[in-house]
Amino acid sequence: MRRRPDLHFHIDAVVRDLYGDKLTLLQLKTVKSNVAKVLNTGLQLGIWHKVLYAKNVYTLHYEKGVTSKQLKK
Image (tube, rainbow, N blue to C red; front, side):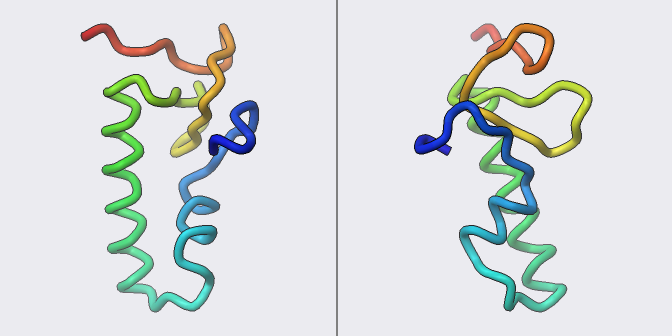
């Protein structure tokens, strides 16, 4: 994400980039759940933003009307 902060990343692409395509369905479900937890934690900490109107899509670059604002602490 840091190499391309302006791009939007879907959780499936993040999982595929980290773990490859050779996971069983059970492994894929577990890994996807763990990655989603990490992404949500990063969202709460203000490390990245969630793309509005898209499920499980994140980005480092804030864009008004496209991404969520950082959460207030």
